[in-house]
Length: 311
Image 1 (tube, rainbow, N blue to C red):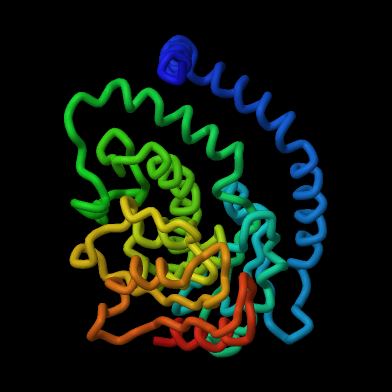
Image 2 (tube, rainbow, N blue to C red; image 1 turned 180 degrees about the vertical axis):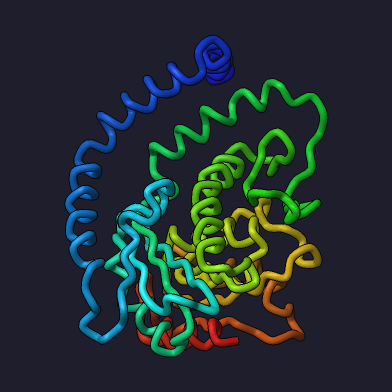
C-alpha cells in the first residue's frame, strides 16, 4: 500500500510537480498548523519591535527584519553582538520554543566573547511544512537514481560544494528519514551562507549550537558545512549516525553539555556518538555531563558553552 502511494505521488510529481506540491502543502498546513501560524505571527510582531532597541543588559541588538527578506529561515530571528564580528554563533531553540526562550543563553555567551555575533533562529527547520516539502522533493530522486551514490557516513560531505547543501541526486544517507533531515537543513545552511558573506567570514568562524531538537539542526548542518564547532545541549535525542561524516574528513569540533537525568537525550549515546569529533579518548575533551540535571538549560551551559566558543 505504501509503495503504491509513493508511486502515485511520484507520477503526480512528474505530471505537475509544482502545482501538486503547492496543493498538498497548503492542505497540510491549513489543518495541521493553523494555530501555530497565528502564534508565530504574534511572536514575530513582538520580536520586530524588540529588534529596534538596545537590550536591558546593554547588549546591542542588530535588526535583521528587513536585511534578510530573502532568507525564510532568518525571519523573526534575534541577532545581537558585534557589528563587525570575528565569529558567528547560530543558536537553535527546542521544538515549539521561540528565540526569546534561549536569549539569556546567547547573551551569556556574548559577555564572554564580545567580538562575537549571536543569531538565534525563530523558524523551525523541522516543521511539518518543511518536512513535507522535503519528502516531495526527494521522491523523484529515488526513482531516477540508478547507481549507488556516495554517503556522508562513508565518504563525508563535499566541502567544495557551492552552496554547501545536501543534494539527493549526488549523495544519499542510506535512510529516507536521514535524507529528509538533511534536506530540511539545507535552508539553514543557505541562511548561514548569507550571514557569512555579509560579515566577510567563513565556516572557520562559525559555531552552531542547539538545545533539544535544535541540537539536531546544529549537528547535521554543522557537519554539512564543516563549521568550526558545534555545541550540543540536551540532544540530539536519537543521533542519526548515518548523517555524520568520518572524523578524518572533517575538522569540526563538538562540545557536549547535557544532564545525566535527561530522559530525551541519554548522555551515554551522545558521548559515544560524538566523542570522536572532540579529540577521541586521548584528545582534548569538550564534554560536560551535569549531575541530576534533566531536560533544561542552567548556568553551566552559559559558562561551558562560552568557554568552548573562546577556544
